[in-house]
Image 1 (cartoon, rainbow, N blue to C red):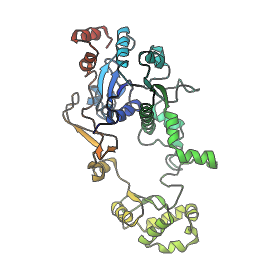
Image 2 (image 1 turned 90 degrees about the vertical axis):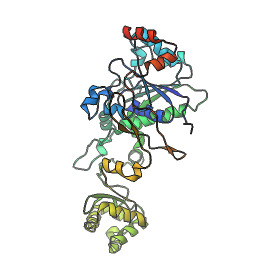
Image 3 (image 1 turned 180 degrees about the vertical axis):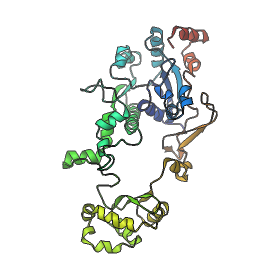
Image 4 (image 1 turned 90 degrees about the horizontal axis):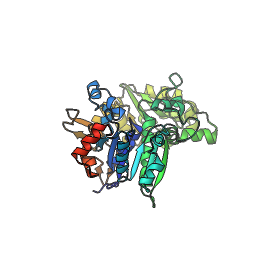
Length: 397
């Protein structure tokens, strides 16, 4: 199978997560992604993760997670020879992705207008916390900052725990995915060439559709509802004999099926639970009645039985449990790389969650050591070993 972005070259100038995650998607779609890193230190994510030894080796788990399939070179953008070499590389590229603070690339003389002079049909994507203009344009941004200012934390948790951080860097990954979608779309335009301004703040707000729209259109005040689904009842997480189960009886017919299965058919005659709106108003008493009927059930067995009769349900599982489950383990979400250079052992990393024509998207090479592809990439531009050595000694690469 020819991947959709085969033949497309992407220069990945990004650090940590939003930008690398964006280019991770593009690499799996077939793009030739060249990671252009700072000499000596590279992507900050090389020093981040739960394994201190890998951090010290500049192959941190945070880096390994989204850089498989990429090639790595180093360039000093502040050195005139490094800048000149980078411009030669830009001339071979279709896309440049960066997530520096707005204005940094312009001050280096490597902003969109300068690069467009070298490659007129270049797609240039700038990912930032707040976009390229506005009163917060100069603020630094990390995922937790965006989670806070976006309102995500204000609606996460319940009345006792909110505001609460989402348990993974959701705004970084949403920002990266939004940028990848914009780049893939821009590659389809004719003529090609544009500047993409991707704001992490706006990207995550765009995914909060019902919350934002209920506020804008219906005047509803966004609130933290914990494990309850405020749009229906019974819909949320319920305690069983051995753990939590999510049940989403959002339709009247699903409510009938659920109440019959649990021996609670008489509740349908109670005016407190007669309609969807009645059940929403009395969701907490309804929860207590349902949970009293679940004490003799296990979450996974109940989920299996409810799904069989047409009531959406799923046990609340740990990350380790779901990764081991055949639903995930057998579908090709994970790639294994053996004896990874710089790591010294086998690793497993997550792909994209997409299959094309029945085949999972994978890349053929592990995350690269810093500068591992200097000879390969610079050699393709006509540099020989002596040239590369000279530029290295000068501090340009």
